[in-house]
Image (cartoon, rainbow over all chains, first blue to last red; front, top):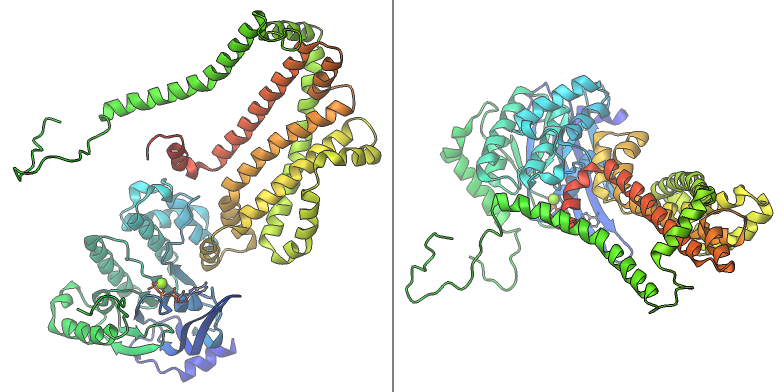
Length: 281
Length: 293
Ligand SMILES: Nc1ncnc2c1ncn2[C@@H]1O[C@H](COP(=O)(O)OP(=O)(O)OP(=O)(O)O)[C@@H](O)[C@H]1O
Ligand SMILES: [Mg+2]
């Protein structure tokens, strides 16, 4: 992969204190247009952006601005219409990528345990190891008593936790999460945010792209928050979060946290189109 | 029930009540009764119809020569069974199905999955197969007779081809209509072609696939009985058709009854296999039966 070398050299990684990352993501004037016989939707871009190795980056933006499209581009499920997307690794070997999809992406015909184990089996992990690792992550997600259940018998939030367990169990170089906590109740959401923070702190090598509608969540978890404009989504704002990697829940109460949230909200607010019939608050 | 639900506002009266349909204990009793009633109806309705027939035939309400009483027909059936003739016919039909159906189903599944997963092969073969699909399969009997001669091969080929078309089209449509998100999910897990087929494509298509397998079974019986009317000297179709020619209506009805019975049993076997193969659909099935939910 010649690209890998090129991108690494050109990288303007602002997190030089984190040399442990295993994959750097870079978008160069990427656009995506969905064409069908009847219509043409310019969903995304042009977006240029570098996500440093080991960085935890949150994407926020109005509904329909192309966040999921960007995630699928990174995951390799879509190709850009224009521009180029590259992933660079230290040895030029393709990184492992795991994705938590907005609509869960778990398989209804497999039990909770088999859903998680399948991801590991796909990576060549032997069956007994896959099983015990899957059990470990299900326990971590509070699903140990539902291992043998089929997803159709679970609540929305439980299915989402299965999807999260599946992604985390593979211990990927790049973790893509598309609104993973959207259908969880507030307290569980907070618990899992703290869990994810701990996981991110333990494994500093992982590059994470996290899509969310919650500014608090974005600030709390990430090193960097990217605010996207309404469709076609472009980078409107790119803000470093001024907290150290080793942070804890108490930062939520700090003045800096709330000031940052206020600033980001100011930027985001202008992008959210209100229904024509109602007057702004 | 005994709790006080009098409105706080004394100028209001209760307008709607939402109460438990039944207690937990009662629910269990209800479910058992629900099952009992449904089973009872399933068995009772045909029995009542047979009883009505019996009475009408015996009282002369309908002509007992063209419509012999079920008990009469049963007697003649027992006579036919005594010298093994009935068993020979049942076995002839059953054997043709047991050989022809799996062949047709297997080839149909294979071609359906291949065409469902490859747009290129679909583009190449679909118009041709669609053209053949609309041809009533029984019209192929003369063709098979001239190619394969008389005897078992043309009969088995007819069943196989009939089943093939139903299973092929059902499988292809089931595969094509799998939501794209599953494919993306499989791709993101890094599943290869074979693993995707095994862990995603086939299970996703399985529920719809079993619908076409069941329809295929019913059509197989229909076609083989029709073929037996015209060719050969065995099978339930032969028995039905030739009893009429001999004016032994009892045998004719016995034959019809046995065809129906065979159809019900074979379709139930396919349905049972489908249930066994799709355990994740159990909750949906309970809802369909009117339980739970
Ligand atoms: N497969 C597709 N075919 C056609 N249009 C699509 C497709 N996928 C997405 N789009 C369009 O692209 C735009 C961006 O969609 P996307 O799902 O990326 O938005 P999003 O930012 O994730 O929104 P949300 O926050 O609501 O999840 C939308 O207008 C959508 O209609
Ligand atoms: Mg989305």
